[in-house]
Length: 107
Ligand SMILES: [Zn+2]
Image (cartoon, rainbow, N blue to C red; front, side, top):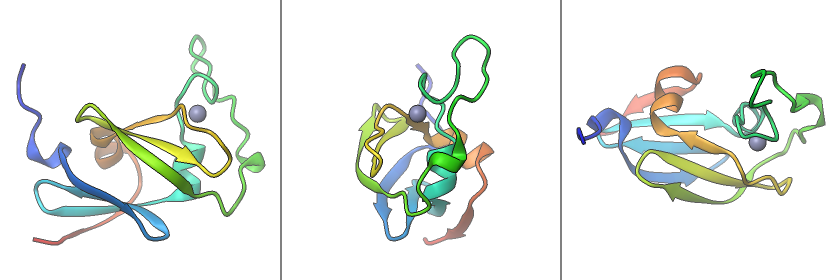
């Protein structure tokens, strides 16, 4: 299997009001809690067959935040949110390529 390029591999994940993901190419990307929670693509948030979103963003608490998280292989992050939801897996590559965020070069 081909090795995943450095810009999609992570060194560290931490939370300080945003989800901070430090990629191995030295880029720190920062993602908002609320928008990440609303973008969950698990089977209870998005219909697997139609692809339609089931989750109602207006029901998500504005102060939603992660309680805990765990790596899924080397490609993603499973976040346990303060509303009890923990089935969503956020793919590091998708986050970097397709999800709006701020980023800076840190080394
Ligand atoms: Zn979900």
